Length: 161
Ligand SMILES: NC(=O)N[C@@H](O)C(=O)O
Ligand code: NI
Image 1 (cartoon, rainbow, N blue to C red):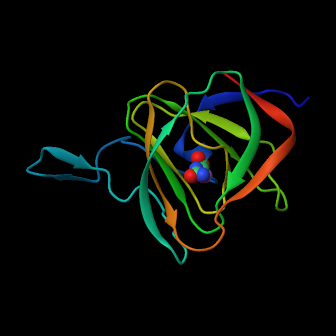
Image 2 (image 1 turned 180 degrees about the vertical axis):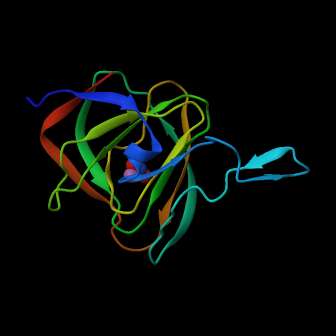
C-alpha cells in the first residue's frame, strides 16, 4: 500500500505543469461595463484539436474523504475545464506522465469560486466535488476520434485531507 496522498491548497504555480488555475486573484486585467465589472481576461489555454469547443453541465455526486482513487484518465486531443456553478471548493487530482503511464498523483483543493482547466493530455482524476450540489460547467472537446485514455491503478491510492 503506497503512502496516502494528502490534499493541499491549489496554487497557480503548483498546478502550472498540469493546467490553469482560473481565479480572481489580484486586480482585474481591465474594468468593463461602466466600471461595474472586473474582467480577468483570457485565463485558460484551451485546445480542441480537430474538434470544437463544447459546453456541458455535470451534476456529480460529492465524494467522501478519504477518497479511493482507482483510476486517472487523460484526453489526448483536447483540454478540459471544470467550472463550479457553486461557491464550493472541490478536489482536483492530477499526475505527471511517466513514460506513458501516470506517476504518483497529487491532490489539490480549490478555493471558493475558483475553476481549473486541464491542459491537453494531463492525467487527472474525474470530476470530484466535495459538497452538494456537485454542479459544474465543463468546457472540453467535441469531435471525432478517441479522446479518452484511462489508467486503472493496480492498487488504489488513498487521498486524505
Ligand atoms: N468523461 C467525462 O465526460 N468526464 C471526464 O473526462 C472527467 O474528467 O470527469
Ligand atoms: Ni476528464
